[in-house]
Image 1 (spheres, rainbow, N blue to C red):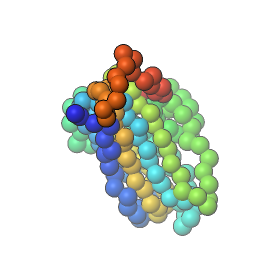
Image 2 (image 1 turned 90 degrees about the vertical axis):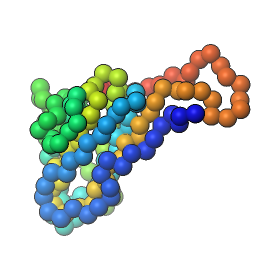
Image 3 (image 1 turned 90 degrees about the horizontal axis):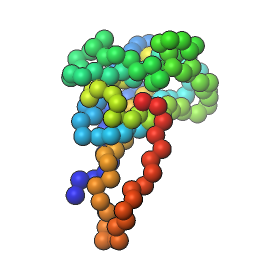
Length: 156
């Protein structure tokens, strides 16, 4: 039986030195939903400040560069909302690590997703995707029912 979910490392945990864009891509073939989590280090340390851009885009073909993606407005963050920015990047702690969590309904987007994170200053960063398929059956020898669990998925 195929498992209902898989964890994909989009960007392995690493230390980034200096400002710059961090990008990653994801092939979503065979999945209906994704939880994308960006984990970053403490803000306000060693000159690190709030990122100016966090965005997820889509493409029907394999991605070689971020400019090949079309932004998904509801999954694009910036300093103020607009026609091209769906959310304001929230406040952060100077003493605790931060995380940004996206819930994406993959049934209405192109096959490939791309991630861009504008890192300001030196910091630690990682990005993961929990990919989910439709329920395929019981995981153990238990009685089956005629209804699948209800899924609550935000934006996408």
